[in-house]
Amino acid sequence: MSSNFEARLAELGITLPSAPAPAANYVPFIQSGNLVFVSGQISSNEDGFITGKLGADMSVEDGAQAARACAISLLAQLKAACEGDLDRLRRVVKLTGFVNSTADFNDQPKVINGASDFLVEALGDAGRHTRSAVSAASLPFGVAVEIEGIFEII
Image (cartoon, rainbow, N blue to C red; front, side, top):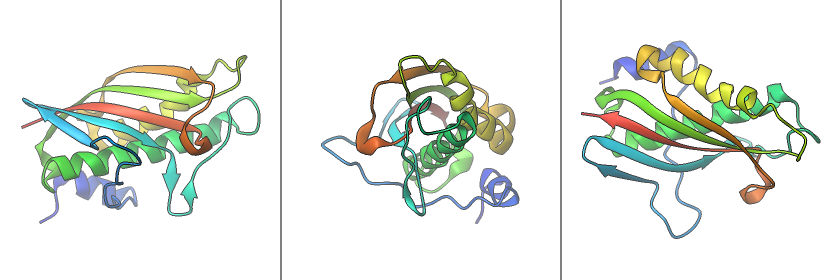
């Protein structure tokens, strides 16, 4: 049985991948009450890691696509946390986005908009959230973006 959220994702041409496995000694998500805290998801797609440094060798638009890829991985982890039923999601509460960028790059919010815009497009009002968008001198594996999330579920 397909969820309403997954039907909307399908309309957008998105099939959630299997939830990525942790790259080190941590868990991909923890549920506490009706909140699910999802560990940082790094920018990747079917071709591998999306790498680059904003302000040096990557455009804001490419960074926003990397952030969108992180949001898709966040939803994949959330689906795993919800035992396959994405319709248990009530709302995205908060995203914290880290952008691999040069010291003088200041468009981190525009990069993380790639995730925020996607979540609202895919989830409607449930996708509206609070957010932080910060610079990082480097990120694991040289990826362009890493995003962690907090979600409310039933």
